[in-house]
Every structure is written in C-alpha cells, then in structure tokens.
Length: 221
Ligand code: CTP
Ligand code: CA
Image 1 (cartoon, rainbow, N blue to C red):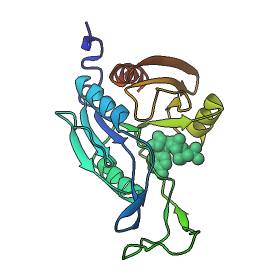
Image 2 (cartoon, rainbow, N blue to C red):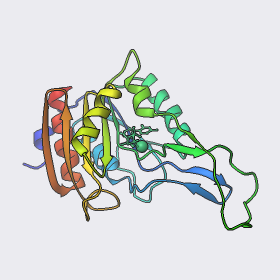
Image 3 (tube, rainbow, N blue to C red):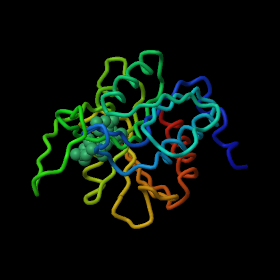
C-alpha cells in the first residue's frame, strides 16, 4: 500500500532539509539566482513527515505551498541559509538533506540605489558564498548528511567527488542536461551514491522519487 512501507521509518527523528534557490541582491530591484522550483525539497519534506520525522524545511523563495505538518523557515540569501540551517542543527538534527540550489557567488556589494544603465558593458564583482552543506557535514556533531549534485556532464564522477570532498554519507545526482527532467519540471530521475553502493531511481514524479529516497536513507541512517 502506497506510503505504508515507509511509515514510522524515521519516527522521532529530527530532519532538516534545505530547498529552493537563493537570491543574491545586486541592487534594490535585481538579484542573481539559480533555476529551482523547490519541488524536490518540498516533496522530501512531505516524505520525511510521512515517515514519522519532525521536519524543518529551510526554504529559499519559491512559489509552491509548504507541506502541512512541516515547520518552514524562509531565507533569501546563501548567507541566510547557512545561518538558519546552523541554528536548526544546533537545536537537534539526526538527518540533514541539502536540496537547495544555492548561488555559489554573490555580488561583492549590493548597491544602495538602483543601478542606472550607462555604458554598453558592465562588470559585476562576485565573491564566494559559504557552503551550507559542507559546513553542516564538517561539524564534529554532524548529522547523517545527504547532498544533491546537479551536473550536466560526468555525473557519477562529479557527484562522488562531491560526496568525498564534503564528507557526505550519500549524494543524490541528477543530470540536469536531460530535457523534461529536474529543474522546474514535474519529474526527475536520479542516481544515489554512497561510499559502497549506488542505485538509480526514476524517471518518476518528484514525490515518488522523494518517497523512495527517504526509504533508502532510512535503511542507511
Ligand atoms: N550547497 C550548499 N551551499 C552552497 C552550495 C551548495 O549547501 N553554497 C549544497 C547544495 O544544496 C547541494 C550540494 O551542496 O546539496 C552540491 O551543490 P552543487 O552546486 O552541485 O555543488 P558545489 O559544491 O556548489 O559545486 P559546483 O557548483 O562547482 O559543481
Ligand atoms: Ca554550486
């Protein structure tokens, strides 16, 4: 029966999930962002809730409704995301899942007033953002930490490199070059890697993939 398989698999576990894009302001009316609907992270939050977990969803700006029974903490920038995620993990966290599409760089300065157009070319200075996932996974009291990797080439290689570099227990890789899957789409297909195994899930709806991911994580946690 749909759903009953994973019921209680994460009973009494505290789960923190990041979702959606971040927005990095350039001036009062403009920002840099990534493609991300938030659907995968929101589906994971619902699946973890259905598995009995207490779920905190740290969400960048998205246009979808929050899943009932999940605590949502809204953030805008990558720096906000790190701050809010660190507080949530401090409060107690058994499982951390980073599905957010975080902007890797932010404008060095946010102009106080709207930038007016003038010359034909314009340069924007960017600085690196903090990595929420690597920071959480690197804590001495790190929870079981799962990351995502959106890649367009050499998916398995880049994903497993990321898992090792960020000290993750699992990484969920999706090939975002496949049309109709992933970004801003209803469906997705992923390959999950852990240190001594891998499995492909989908193509299927994001909710079905999220349910299967939560089942898989439950058996490894
Ligand atoms: N991530 C994060 N904070 C960042 C950047 C990424 O928490 N500042 C998380 C994402 O939520 C995802 C994982 O790290 O779970 C991998 O994100 P990705 O962009 O694929 O990897 P990067 O390490 O940023 O490497 P690159 O973009 O250069 O491939
Ligand atoms: Ca990145």
